[in-house]
Image 1 (tube, one colour):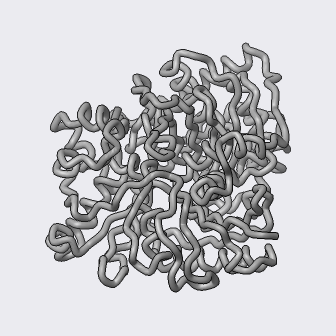
Image 2 (cartoon, rainbow, N blue to C red; image 1 turned 180 degrees about the vertical axis):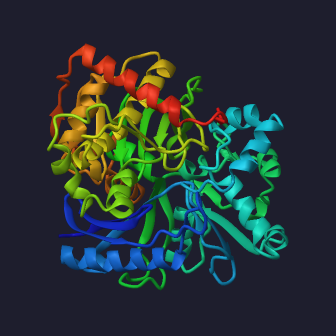
Image 3 (cartoon, rainbow, N blue to C red; image 1 turned 180 degrees about the horizontal axis):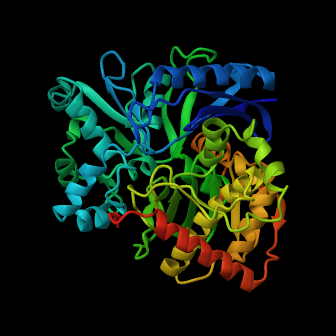
Length: 499
């Protein structure tokens, strides 16, 4: 073979590296999990050293499995957990604090103070986001306020801020490059999505020095080359970059207005392409950058369920009722339905369309004959119900019904979940042959960046569907299940929603 693309998918619970041929076939794949750190209830952190080891070890294993040599790598693409916040010393490259993860809720009070001061309309208008601890801006301020001397050092230009993409590029280039792409920038509360630039007024309100911010680049271009990276030769171009959900939208070839995908990972995220026009949401969704190619920016509507696969992990690790995440489908199939049991997986608050960081998880409808199988089925149902709420809000904002949903991520391999999702949406659901579409999207962007793919049509031609699910549930049953879910959500919510 003449060359390959290395795609790094740095996720919330682990790092996956995929080696793809020039025609986008998977040659090798490896994953390394890393620890989740919970210093206090509602706080979630990552050790950056553990993340870096996971990336380099997974890269070495993927290359070995693909039986390729590093010098044949044409380009590297990066996709990443978004909003997770890193602050590091520009000179040494060392983080001054653990990464604060997107799930972390410690800055909820700071967001409430900004809302109470009347700043929400400004942030929504310029960033397309809501004031929620999910996003990066208040996390940066927290680090600067809690690490001794950090704020003064940041103002002096000694410290750098970035999301995981930015930090990885910095490490891959031995500290020579400090950049991010437009998709990740759009998740910080610091970026004006209309002007395509950092906003000094928003940075002032969030108390984040502009000197910390990376240069914002497109999603497909050469940012720099590798230097001193284990298992990789120097000089490989890093040429594609996008936040994980935007990368999945790109990997699913959702290139037309109205195309939508849902990624089922630790959380579940649905995005709909709205073209070159940002569509403001009146139903609790986010307006975000889908991707930037050259000088053209494309936008999307987004809805996020903070807990999806993480609910299954909780059954495994917190309750010990399943031995592995893969066991949940078999256990859930032991019963015909969840019965009256409803699980609202608000284990990290509720995202769109509710935006209630103080909501808490709820298992409702337990009776004496409830067993583990009912709980497993209710967990899968709860994931699908959240997506149903998001699609409903998206349809209202877009003024059109969803024609078809493209799905990816680990949980999309669960046929029971996908059929229930299809039934509750009353719309077809397509699962692709390659479900690692976050990694695939990053690879496509990197390929574009070095000229391997001529255009979007060349990428579209490579997309293949594995299975299409068609709705079978009666309308009356769908309405009954919907009503039971809405009642449970009302019980899980606090009286302090954000939006």
